Length: 369
Ligand SMILES: *Cc1c(COP(=O)(O)O)cnc(C)c1O
Image 1 (cartoon, rainbow, N blue to C red):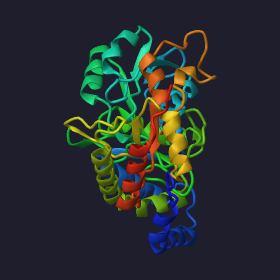
Image 2: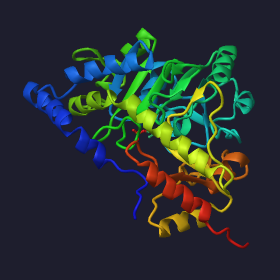
Image 3: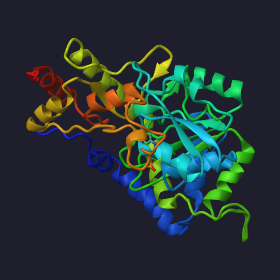
Image 4: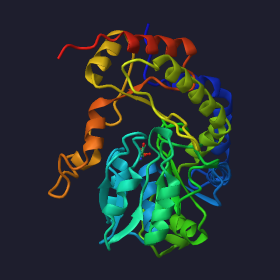
């Protein structure tokens, strides 16, 4: 018995005919760059999120970087970001020319600790980049309140949270802009790299369209930084097929997560929280255990795949661990990184597989210190 951490081939077998037809459509039109499928995906994805505009780009990191740039954030500016996230959240700030200022994790939700944001604000702070980590929305009410008080831009990192809701509204509709990733394992994933930005700001959307396409607002006039961050038409065509199934896949993830929660209640691991008003989409199903390494080894022995998201907080990654960012600075995130374990989770996973994983977690012999 082998239970993989994530499995992508079943989904593509089920959708084979629809995806093949979508690819053929692009091949027949030959509109490979910014073709009609890119424009249609943008319309459909914006509508899905409840945002006015969407701009397709080449990956999630660029989605976040161009979001910051479109709001004029760059050199000399500081942007607040959780340290408990994927490095790309901070990298987007670095690549925009600004400085990431890290904030610790909330001990209960593991998202950015909103009580600690104001302490990190300086006269140079221009934006907050909250992350909807693992698919759970950040506390947007508090974050938008702080942003209003200090006149800050909010860019949501929604790369793990397509379709997640906060107080009934989808992520990607709260901030000045939001970045999403279509990396293949994400809840909405392409067959390669891809990303998209949502925004309600017409001027920013126009700047993002120029920034992704060699800085051109008008053809052959390269006004803004001449980057190439375009989304491929082929990826857009595939993603349009998959977008129709996203809600079904989210429902499946939520059903499997509920099973995990129920079966793991009373075990040695802490299960994820979903407070009232929040709708988690379980991109990752992450538990916490003081015996994480032993638990991971036990599951591996039983043929169960797991992963750690992420083994180090961003402020301690070699690229960021400079004089300002030190060990001991963000104790909650630092401890979390030693205790978290991502269990198998994908929409096609069976209930029987969840039962097996949960019973193996419960059976784990607690190591003697
Ligand atoms: C995946 C991810 C990104 C970056 O997405 P890419 O498409 O791989 O560039 C950014 N932030 C978070 C939280 C992610 O999970």
